[in-house]
Image (cartoon, rainbow, N blue to C red):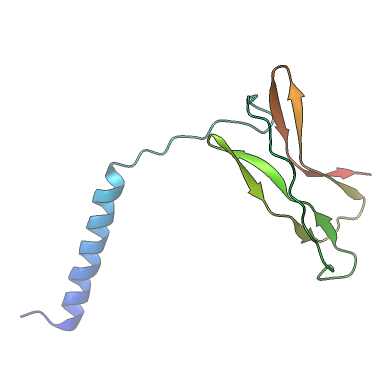
Length: 112
């Protein structure tokens, strides 16, 4: 007969073994590059209207939401408030025409 601690050890071992079996068939493939990389043929949807409200701390900067490219589709990333960086300004995320397609340019802090 098993004691409770022994049953816990057996249960934990079974859980680990089960997870290993499930993950053995998993293949993790890298996503297609898009930031400064590949040009995609799907135009981004219109930017969503967001209501920023009041900043959580005086002086915070609103970083608006943007459409990112994940796998094979556009995914919305909601805007958020961020602490300012002295000597920098926020350059928003954008999509640019590149030949027949679109290239994503991520938002970033730029020196003033």
